[in-house]
Length: 419
Image (cartoon, helix red, strand yellow):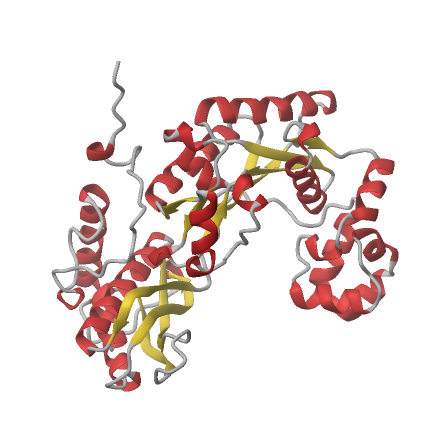
């Protein structure tokens, strides 16, 4: 049996842990630069605020209905996520951390009669010990567990827990479950399925495996088999390295000067390189892109990117920043006001699998030692304690006008209790 633990409205729930007065009120959390909505309380959802909606579109509604906004506080959210995941590990043999607010649970070896009691205990204890409300669905496969978790979240009578194990119950649920909500069925596939009069999960399971394979390939067949109760998507109890690492931001105002854009892009590159080293990877390609504000219809528009090949695999911030700034010069155009920029590291493999070139001009061992010291210093004393000169002394700052304190990760922001 598999379970899916899904934290309810996670970012909003994190804010409510340290500010209980927010409970029962419409609350939204905004993306980097306070650009759009990335988390909503149930009260905000009831007002019609959609996920990903730009802030300027909901400004009047927010003022009329008293919607409370918060800037994304990823330091706080990441720490609370780690606490939730650590507690989940204590209940089951193994877990797969699927995202910052979701984890698959493996109930193998647990007596069947104990699974229900354990599931209820998980929901209760996670809320009590971390303050984060959690929905849990348990079923025969990961895909069915996803369905059960959605039910536990949408139906208050279930008290945030759904054990979906009986065949007759599964059939009833799948008959009403939208095909577009099936795990692994994306927008394009759901459109194709609906064009073939397949509107529900039950409709999907009714077609032949051969038809699914011809239309959706092996991935579609796995979803089809899982909905039939046949486990074929294994639990991954270790986090695999990313195939791409992207860091991008929208600027608070249009930037015209090359030096300012270069500082921002260098900072994004340094952040991506740090993530690359954290997963013990190296890369051989990096892409940089810049674009103007598409919402300013009267302004001159420009979007361009460039893929920069690197002769030898590297994880050096110095080398990557050097390459990115060189590539930026090729695509930057004077006179344009750029609203967003970013970098994407690609062609990633494990550092241990790479044989260094004898003709590599840079001192690999020396740069590796410097990177190790830089990462350790930034971990111990805070991000950007050590940085490249290209990033500039004055760091690029995104709009965070509604940022809460880092209650659990900063001594300066630790909560004060007045008696």
